Image (cartoon, rainbow, N blue to C red):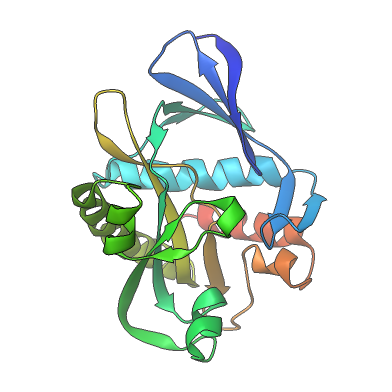
Length: 237
């Protein structure tokens, strides 16, 4: 397989075409951003860690029957994935109150929700990824509502798998964001990455943050925290 031209560059990743039209190479950068790109920093080695964590999690989800774009890890910074057209609707699953949810509704951070909450957001940097309901999605023609319902269903399945996986490592899955795409043959799959950039993860006992909130709120050395998380996830048992 041969890596070819750059198709897309985002805040944290670059997507390259390959000599196989249905496959792409995803390269994980060290760039770290928060608050819609207002806060930026290059943190050496972060891309390597996020590729390792994402690959580990996608391998778990593939084994559990979740449809994903992930094929295999190629190198320290690269993974091979199915080429997809990203659906501009992000799905967020919340198990505990945190982030924008606490700001919107005044519920104290860390409050356990009675059941997982699924929210949808328009993937639009210029508008700061606004919260959208089914009627907004339909009106704005962002996605087929049948696909959105399937995305939410898959997101809840992913939540159950990852909650158990992280709990075995003494970690709370507070919330996480998922992106989905359609393969050239029209199959809906989980895409992008699943890493501490896109999840909120806390130590179950101390409530120490093990995710990008460390960078957002200057709570310590992000690379050190991400390395600690990776080591815990790689431990057997």
